[in-house]
Length: 155
Picture 1 (tube, one colour):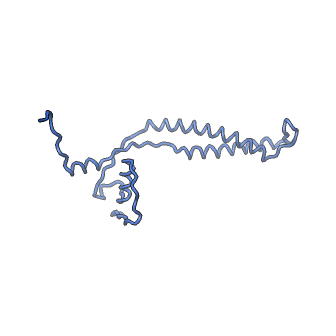
Picture 2 (tube, one colour):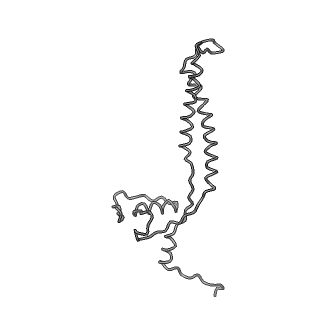
């Protein structure tokens, strides 16, 4: 004899209904690669502008230690290195601030499976739905590329 209540068996229909609803947290976060690329381009443009200003004088630019004239390419190389590092650091700072700000606009949506295409906001075929389930569960199952794709009514 056991004390307490025994667990009630879960019907397959109730289990299927519970597994058809998936909550997801959605927020608009900035892309790090996009921010760093933009910062890099701006850094190169700043290096080009600084180099052009330095070499625009009528007297040639000379190395302060050896007195040898410095070429445009050499000056641009050093300025590009300095400006890229500075722009990347500023870009990372901007990205961190934008990412922190995006955390305030978090919302949770619930994805619910439906068999009626008229009620669906988005239509997924069987392979896309399986990929979504695998990503959600964290498992990685090999996909069969020879398997025929199931078509949705909109296709």
